[in-house]
Amino acid sequence: MNLDLTGKTALVCGSTQGIGKATAIELALLGANVTLIARNEDKLKEVVKELPRKKNQKHRYLIIDFSKTAQIKPKIDRYLAKYPEVHMLINNTGGPSGGAIIEADAAQFTQTFNEHVVAAQLLTQAVVPSMKNAGFGRIVNITSVGMKQPIIGLGVSNTIRGAMGNWAKSMANELGKYGITTNNVLPGYTTTARLEKINETRAKATNKSIEAIEKDLLKDIPIGRFTAPEETGAVIAFLCSPAAGSVNGVSIPVDGGRTNAV
Image (cartoon, rainbow, N blue to C red):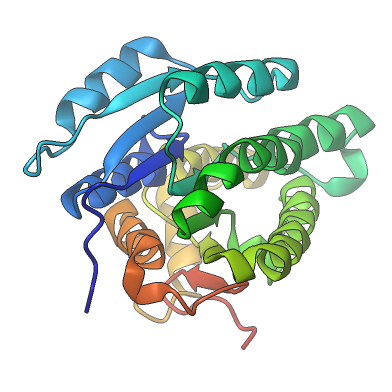
């Protein structure tokens, strides 16, 4: 199986923690040059130092705050002017806060749509020319199982994840002929800061302990535990590899079997 990414470059968004960071490490282990993208420069510098360099890779970082849509295009354009080759793009942005969808205001929907769908569109438009030239491209979106099975209490997230799924499928249909694949990875309950915040919100809303909330969640996971970020990162790394060249336009849950949809 050809998993070698030596000589190829990946842009990994939201890569200073959680699944994004785990993905960056996995890609570097396969030989890729990795450019981390996030908004906190101090954290970016720390993670760059942690990335494997067994194949003499050159790892970099780029500061972009996806909540500020207007800065995305000029920043990625300046980066590409210096480092034009990109073979992989991992779209990843933190999800919105939880709560009943009936109580969400219009601004939440607009902001979340911009941070996920619009950001992915701008980045993809910027890097696809390089992928076409190489005859090789991998676009992987880290979304949520809410794309397939809406999660109670995450109405805004569920809505935008659905939009992201249709965006990705449309992109897969258009770009496949150039050797560029577009896929979604759908994390379930994963041991990240995001899950901690969601559980804290649920605990306050129900007057339950964090432990009780976690116990309730585990009842719905066939493997009986939460997923580690590294496990999700490994699936993403495979999708980026030459071995996954025919995997295109799909959405893969990495949730221990929690999703009921086939």
